[in-house]
Length: 232
Image (cartoon, rainbow, N blue to C red; front, side, top):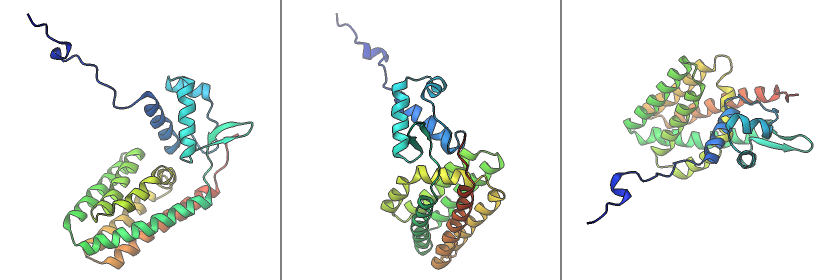
């Protein structure tokens, strides 16, 4: 008589989709980007172990990874802290954003594809809904979806890849600018102008609207960074 194998009973142990290290990394990164941990805050390994429920080895790996992303700095005699935002680096990030997003917006307008407008409007609706619900994480998610549509709809995957490499730092800056006074009104209104220019097939107008949106965010970020103070 043939004995059934364990696989026949559907009890095979599935590997988790994410490791404990990856989950811990996501949690600490989110805590920094959301502002729970602020620039200059000390990141004490013992405290993080207790808060995350993981080993010190995992915490150290997470902190090293976040240091490589520019979110954590390791100071002599002080240890790891949430990195203070550097104005020169922020300026370069916005320069890159402006160049690439302006190009993508122009190409979207010249493409004349109604599905582009639909995708952008859907993302913008999500941004406005998230602002209304005071869901800043949702604002970041839908904002990323907006720009992904802007690049992917005109097959600019290389440009999107460059933007993606900067995503963590961009979101760190964006997490501060989206909370400033009236940004919940001005930001979506600026994005609406990008969409309208694309709808009209106005390449130059779309480029200019995208640049104006980035320039506005850059000015807000510059002011926020200038006022940042290290934690005691």
